[in-house]
Length: 370
Ligand SMILES: *Cc1c(COP(=O)(O)O)cnc(C)c1O
Image: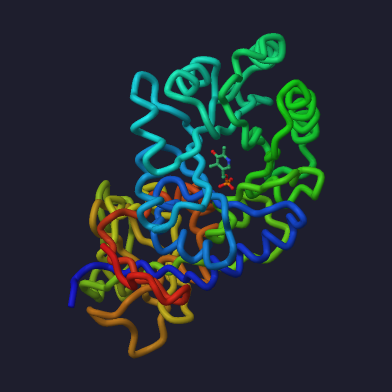
């Protein structure tokens, strides 16, 4: 038995979201972005589930994420791309080759680093409008005019990243697509990839050979501009530590920002901002007790949050009961809206304090993890 709050992750829901996205993107292949520990949900069980669904191309941010993923998959033939590319100054040989990780080459410097450490399979990233990572137009021209620069490098993918993919009517999308086509025409022929989750929903002209969704796999709909219904993947249940019947009008929590009238009933729950239950939910968030919508009272504190459960029909909650902080009825998108952020940040903030419990998915996974 454990005193930890439970974060339940529905692997069957992830599998179904993968099938939904793969069907939209077909005939393009559907990869998966599982950086940041699969958006906080646990890369081992998540990647194994996606592999079982036929996903053959994974993307993570760093070489250490890639090594961990390779170990979790326990096989060598799945593609693992490292979006940040070789770490400047590090030994790319040791970082990448042992685990057959494929770097994204984001600059001429990374390109020559990869070449000097022996070359081989790599992805080339093109900047088409984010000014974050990727080769600029000028760098692509340099490559096109000096074929020696790419010698020994086996370009297995050319990709770029959309800035406004969740806004289907934003002209930036078509601009980036046109720039992508122009730049890639100057490079060796290779598979092409442009679409993140939002890009998948923009239409097949954005799918190219391979799509790279992350957030939509994990049930983020609003911030990805999803046009198909996605399944909710995460359920977060807090435990009620104490129930208080308010006998005189009083304030609630830090800053005395909340207010409870005489006769109100408050429940104190064992989740706070240290658990990724964002402080910006203060005085704005909601949860559910059974079918009843219960408002957050006062500020979220580090380890505790107070909900006004006055509207719950008798007998009402008691200490030890659970309250649904994230659920099918009040999902990641709804919580994100209340917190003034996007579902991506809700998922990746969910702290390491929870006991994670996996339901569904393939047989060969650990069902619980801290
Ligand atoms: C994170 C990331 C993705 C996945 O984005 P989502 O919006 O979560 O689908 C795809 N490509 C790149 C380069 C990324 O950094």
